[in-house]
Image (tube, rainbow, N blue to C red):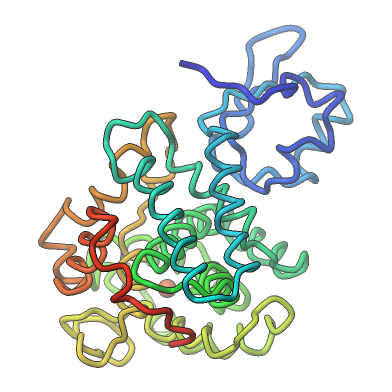
Length: 344
Ligand SMILES: [Fe+2]
């Protein structure tokens, strides 16, 4: 079934529409040419920056959106996440957390719901995203693909962090933004298609990224990029990071619980739950996950904890898998046990 945004069939009269307020397309954007075949100009979840769309606007082009996302789901998720910034009492936060888990469970744990994981991406974007225009432009210019991927990584990390007990809005917002900055040094200083290719390969299999690099200098830059990205993000991103210490998560995003990661070969005992969660999600999300469909959200989060289990076991401890699964699978089980933890 094709879903469309209301009042969204043409950008001609909707230039400041919802689509442009969100940085990520809610569906496929099609240019309906007066003569000739229709042309797909954006895929679901692609960055729809105004600069790019202006070219079509200037030509009075008719653009249609075949939405994969649900405005209702996005709006509900957005409002729930945002409410975390408005409540301060611990019991109110726990109630809100239960509501968020209930919302997320119905959509992304239950495999019966017909929805897209893009709903979570856009809800999180609206609630948390606050990257300044200059940093945003740098990140997008370096790699549109990595930026698009960061939006999914960020939304999954913040949702799962909420599930295991983190309810401080400012911390969750920092966690979300940190996901955009994991490879910041490569984005900003050492940008090369070879290094970005290595990043994507490294997600497929541990060590694979390093093997694809030909020069010793590239290998060194690659191995050191978690530390370099942390240093650079710390210097550049004070404007939109609430608690700079959260950026320390960048340093460990390529570590593995079996100590096969880099640069420090940390093991599971040396990694906190939130570090392990960041490592898990940033390793899990591949380019294939970015082909959003109208039903890819069904069971998405349940599946990521179960599928490819050998790979998952090497990334995420059984304790953390159990903690997330138990929380999401059984809403009434021991919410009180997981008290809010601020910081890392
Ligand atoms: Fe990285």
